[in-house]
Image (cartoon, rainbow, N blue to C red; front, side, top):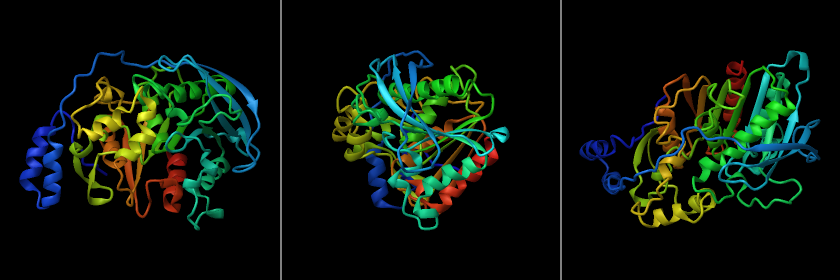
Length: 383
């Protein structure tokens, strides 16, 4: 499966070709505007980000979702651009037969990730799933298949630390890239402290913003290779993700590229986040409303670090992982996440695959076919 994208290096040439061959006047007009995103110069930064520190203590599990889990409050500190304490709740469910353990799967949800995967309202509604809760079906099915499940909720269970945007609560000069330290630190801490550096496969799936965390972890934080702090993920499956593929495109407003998507086939989708998405999921990570400002300027006032802060960053132009990468998109998803994720996916030079789930929305785990595909993919590739 392929995703049509416009890379920064060939952007103006691609615009010229598209304008010459397009048959839609409205699409031509959008592409004309998109050809004028100004180039930005990104300052030099260290290639691999470092993680922070974490302390882990027992916590009370919520009464909903998969039963018989053990919950922990994880307090993360010392991330280079977010040194203050940040707290998250995790729920671990051991498999029915620990002697047959297949591996461990980490789960993250969309946006700021302040929900557990097995009881996220965004993953409920498809009556084909038991109790119309497809997120629960994914977690329970993998647990039944003898995978240890680790769900992450980026919300302080004690309400001591104020985290209005979940893991995206800033400010950080390098925005979501810097704040993804919280996820990488948490995964490392759980693996090294709770799981005692278990040598079984470590895998992850997450939707939208949760998938962006995974992409940052395996790229900028080294968890897709042996260069990172560990664990090295065996397999990951971002779904409808990562939406931070190129933040400079997403924040360019009317100048954002419009591309032809192959999922859904033939759709013309703008990479423009729009003001609502920028306000909820980009601006909170930065010292000010830099994405909204750029959108309102139609790409003429970009923040200097946007490219560097993206999943496909200036220092990782051709990601290569030992981790197997599998991505899923829904045919009903017309959001900017589709083409922006495609930019990152296309750039990967190691083992990868993608699939389009017919009828699935942006909240892909909400769809029965999307949910069952996640289960089958993880059981086939997390080994």
